[in-house]
Image 1 (cartoon, rainbow, N blue to C red):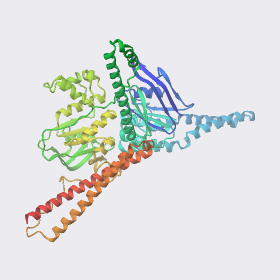
Image 2 (image 1 turned 135 degrees about the vertical axis):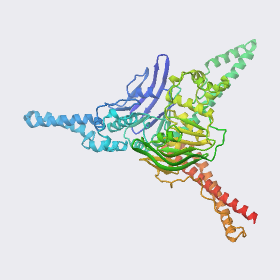
Image 3 (image 1 turned 180 degrees about the vertical axis):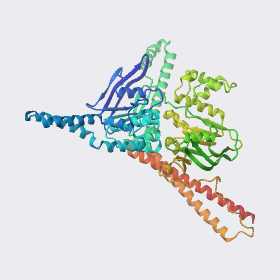
Image 4 (image 1 turned 60 degrees about the vertical axis):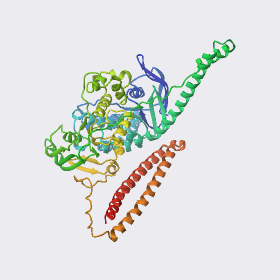
Length: 636
């Protein structure tokens, strides 16, 4: 066992953050630590890495276990190059190499009586070097730098000139090379593009030690983690399997806790009723007093309280816009001499969703600013269709004055206080939180407030730049559901793979000045490019046949369509039955105990749902053709 937490507690002044935390981590565990913002996840990490001491209980580590910690706001030595920074991971081995060289010189000049001691010291140095595989140091550094998206021309750059995101990636890359027994990561996928996230996931899946990671990235938690620690109610609840396996376990635990709570409340009510009716009667006073003692000893289990509950909001609109909503003709975007996009012709139609993705620095946010009108194109044109009412979410929210409640009330002064507070509650602002000063809001809180405003603006076209950044995992899920249900038009920049997967919409992948279109996230992951889009939303309708009569070919086609439609209906029904079967299996405790089986079942379920949707789409297309042919037959 690498880590054992025993009844651990931590407070800051009178504010108790953690209480009665008991958990274990073993070699090979990959533990995802989740919880709402402010519940104590970072405090737990700082205790684990030795930066804080617990007020109660203890955090015990295996003897000699090395701990590596990637904090969110760490620092690098600005004068060291990228490559020199990576070599720091081998500092013990480099020191051993220098010592070995000096010892070998001593050995050559030493008298015979001292040679044995010097040889022992040389053996010790060689053991340190071999343990870190330092003779292959350059190969290891190159492998990790390439995986973390540092091109060779950047290796001699000073760390001080790197962007914040690049510095985070470099700190993570160095930590991976150090290979500690316990690897503790705080939001490691922040600032990573899709290719780098894939590489990191593959690396962590085979990591020899234990990995503890705080993350709000559901796709990452599903791909990497074998256990989940949920920080809630000042303690840690542990679950087996990845995030998808955790969800049904959590629901089952909540149901059990709710039943215990309801039973205790009902028993307390019955005892109190008996006491009220019988305490004053002489014949039943003793029995009533006995019931009172039972009531005093009765412990009522708290009802389950889940962060994110009640975040049930939607984005709706009033004005139905023209079909061709965002028209791009010869669109070219440049920054200085660099071309980000060259001569793109594309039309976004009413109700479409389009994800803009690509590596860091490819120009995704710049392109979105051109589309939403904040920036002029370098060539070509962008035009919004008639009736477009745009809503914009930027990656960094502007600091504002006043209270949270005023941000809504000032824009909608006719709302009552109850209406404003009810609306804010849908976005997680409850009780005294509505009176918080906007200037003190965290990134996630500011984002939630902006979404509350967007919901009231009722746009039929939304431009969103990294909308899930800074949000905790519960708000991310609520937002993902709201965006998937949105019937307006959506253009968004995101690295959130779960959001892309859920939306199931086309993806414009921007890289090296070229725009590549993918049908959906699965196609992007498989690098299966879609044909270049055209402004036309659909294939041209076949010309109406001559009215000379309804011929044999048309009757044959009708019969063929009916046969295909019946076959598709049978396939859709079979796939639906298989989906129900898989969902039942995922609720089976035996299956939930095997995280690898849970992951396979989840993948199979997603694939089955995707195939069923494909069959539905084909069924609708053939049905439309059959209706047209039957209408033509009726006219002849």
